[in-house]
Length: 336
Image (cartoon, rainbow, N blue to C red; front, side, top):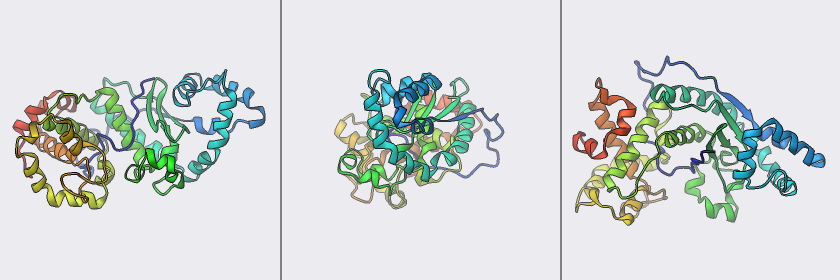
């Protein structure tokens, strides 16, 4: 199981979703054959009065994902701990019922198929998941996981920002409101493509300067926007509309601050954290600007550079990933 779990909003939720371009290169790419597997429904269809027998049948029906689900998500043995699994079943049955009302999977599955098509067009060497597996896991655990068996989606973390399940004292401590507001069905596809990209090319940040980190994040943002070209700006970025507006109105001042006193080339973890971490407000720029304003800056630089590369081999998204951040910074026409 390749646990490249994506918890909402960290590095990579994006800024610039453009409208479908007239000459969209991926538009007519072959559509992959993706199966939607409702493991959640199969799990909660078990009879609590004949649980051990039904549990054995479930494991037999889904051998690969059952191993991942019980051992790595529930962290329980299906053979040795059926009573604990039954306790989870009873505790989470209301959450399963709540996800049934939301019906997130109905919208997500066709959107994912189109996004997978685009991802495969740009990264043909990546082995696409052939299955989208919907499951219900603990609220504290994975919501989006690349496994050997497919891309697994934990619907417990896509019930909608207003879901009362996210406002208990325990869960709100783990996921404060500025995080849980992204626990909505429309984030399934965004998170999934980001997760696959991280599985394809894990981002390495240790020891990098602030400008390098922003551009590495910006590369992935640009790729996300190409795979999801009709998705809204705020959804891809993970900012609120007011946050995005505030950044755009103040981007000149933000860039002036970052480019002064050698801050762009700093490796100070306190500075990089303040510019890149997920937070409801920014320590340097106030409560109207989100903590992770750096991904807007990084994406803007990458987008400018990619616009300069149109018609050249450097416009390839694989080449973008390989291009050093410093090269992109040196060559980009910046307009802040």
